[in-house]
Length: 240
Image (cartoon, rainbow, N blue to C red):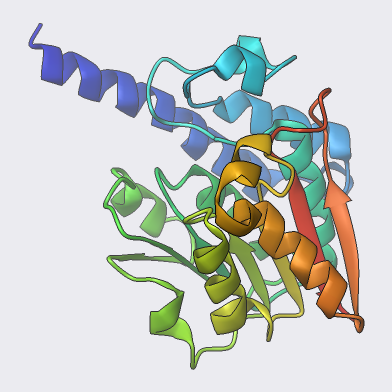
């Protein structure tokens, strides 16, 4: 078999996991949607992208690593807890910055739509890696914009925002100022990821710490599930 065709078929097979998760969420009962254990297992079945040093990054989740670049680059326990919190806000509009292959945007849209049938979600990235968007577009109210940044949406209000794009301080802070600060709920990914602390001003970790220090009128919550406490992590700022 041609190597490029074999690689495509591996990607397509792993993306089927995302589609199955979407259908499972759409058919889930209210008790299942409210269950951390059910949501965690649904996320795990989507699988994880085998990034460099994946055994260390996904400690305890190694059995769920995919064979291709399809799947999540998240700790499943963190992402499940994040979705449960985001759903409480019942957002009508949702923005994800940093789409990559579309797995997190697809899961978030499917899940949040169950709490607000009028949901309209948008996911953006500079690079076109959401290979199978056409199949998700037929299932979910998810709009995919390539070559766009948060600067293109400065005049748009979103109820909820998930910042997971460029992890530098400058970009993380700009994403927050452009779209996150007006959202009822704004989440940052990788707030505890130790390598980003070596970036100027501490990268996204530094942006998150500065936000906590300067915004005294919001509620902050951190979801850090890695055994080391120094990998990934999701920070949530909720307006009160």
